[in-house]
Length: 111
Image 1 (cartoon, rainbow, N blue to C red):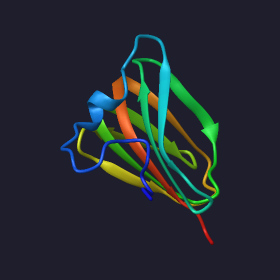
Image 2 (cartoon, one colour):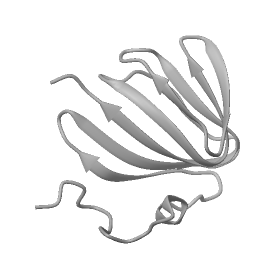
Image 3 (spheres, helix red, strand yellow):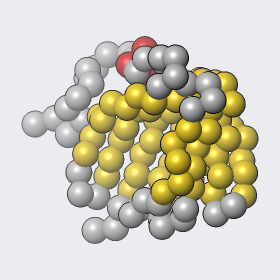
Image 4 (cartoon, one colour):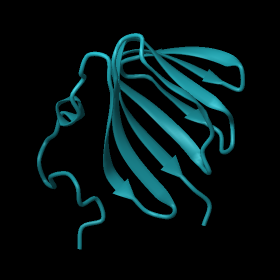
């Protein structure tokens, strides 16, 4: 039984090729969805945003391409390809695409 069952196994992958970066859109592709863990690819077009919200677990944002402005509890962080940030459980946050970006989001929830 595969636990990561929505993406190829034993194959070298470029995650940026797994989620399109379309004009004027936010796209997502779920790789794993469990009660305690989720892994999702997102793409956010330039000048688009994922509005303010919170998560029921710690959320690790891994920027794969482009440039994002991530606001956590009122503090703004600028991230580019290859950079990551952990958003604490229940912290209000939002994401804005300074330049269209792709990311891998991993959320770890309490048991």
